View 1 (tube, rainbow, N blue to C red):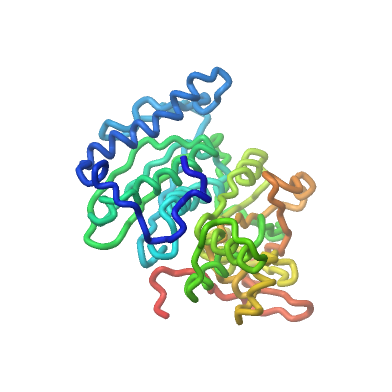
View 2 (cartoon, rainbow, N blue to C red):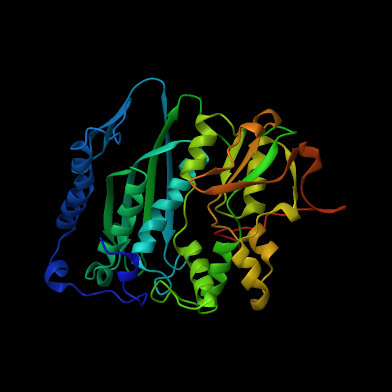
Amino acid sequence: MMDEVEQQARPGSYKSSSERLSSRSEFDFITYIRRRSNKREMALKADPSSSVFPDPSSLSCGIGDDAAVIKQLTGRDTVITTDLLVEESDFRRDSTRPHLLGHKALAVSLSDIAAMGAQPRWALLSIGIPLDIWDSDFVDQLYEGFFALAERYDVRLIGGDVSRTPEKIVIDSIVLGECRSGHAVARSGAKPGDHLFVTGSLGASAAGLRLMERGARLQKLGASDDDSRSIEQLLLRQLRPEPRVGWGLVLGQERLASSMIDLSDGLSSDLHHLCQESRVGAVIESAQIPVDPLVAELAGRRALDPLILALNGGEDFELLFTVSPENICKLPAKVDGVSITQIGQIKKASEGVCVAEGSRVWSLKSGGWDHFKIN
């Protein structure tokens, strides 16, 4: 597997591999992916200490049949999510790289599983691609990015589909996870008096997107000057998000979160989603929102408002969750090196969803991402 620094420096430029790829059929490709998926399984089975197939679930039938079969015993719940990435709507081919796109395709689904407090186990990946992309190494690099992230979390690819599209790339990622029966964390469990927390920092992904819209692109990773490194990090927060799988597991398995949602649409919108499902209101303190330091550093120079990016930007893929007062002392300071910040409190539904800045309080509107919003 290529190191990221060794990937091509110019996005949108893919190597032609006519001898190996242009004559490759769809079924040849499925065979290749099946071998690639089985490769890690065989290595792990050779290691007696491996726990990638822990009881009480196991894969009975994977890639090669019409459907995958997972044996499931009592006492466990299966959690399933699916996400689409559509070219020109969710990504642009000239501003990303195929291995980063493969990473993101899985990451957005892992984030959903984390938001349920579950352990990701299995994945299915379907792609629709134009012929010119099929006849390059784009798809191979995309799957390498997917597999690299999957291996970090012991997630097994068990199926999917591939088809030809007229012009644009379409990617469908499905992930199955599991948790103890009744332990999945829903959006509907928040109660007045619960405290609101968020993992990590906010706004960097939105800042990265704004920079790309203004022409910024990844060069060869490992920029030399400080400003270029900062821009690179912001771009990567948009192109290579990190799902908070560890925090999701802690909050779910330890029954610490009363409700949870991942921040894909933006803090303002996702907080509204959580409050709507729980039939509650909320107030967040603007001064407590953990705006990413790079956003605060660079946004002002580029006429971007850091707070607006943190509230409405979207695609941070952090976790927003609520905790009852008696469980706050049980929260760890960090999980996988990622800290959390208390940003507010759950109120009665009649109080609405608000932002407080000192003595000033105003209603928070949903300002995050909407695929069908008319600009």
